[in-house]
Image 1 (cartoon, helix red, strand yellow):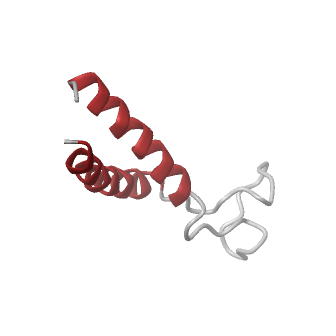
Image 2 (cartoon, rainbow, N blue to C red; image 1 turned 90 degrees about the vertical axis):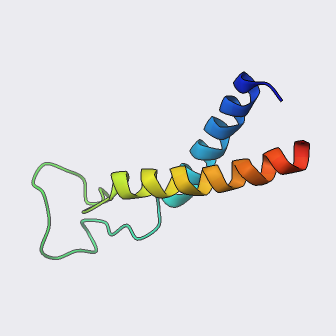
Image 3 (cartoon, rainbow, N blue to C red; image 1 turned 45 degrees about the vertical axis):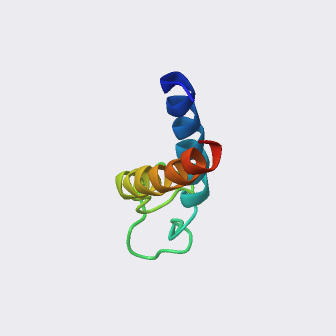
Length: 73
């Protein structure tokens, strides 16, 4: 496996894990009573925790990439 292939596999795994993690633990402004932001729709998340989910996606994608590398190599 070349370096480019390894990087591309990692990026695809990262995006998949990141998009799966996005809806976890999200509360909409309609569901929350204290943190409504004027001018935003009620379906907007109150605290999306994007950086925490990106970090978790990085770690999980790295673990999955190692399994993928072992399987291919």
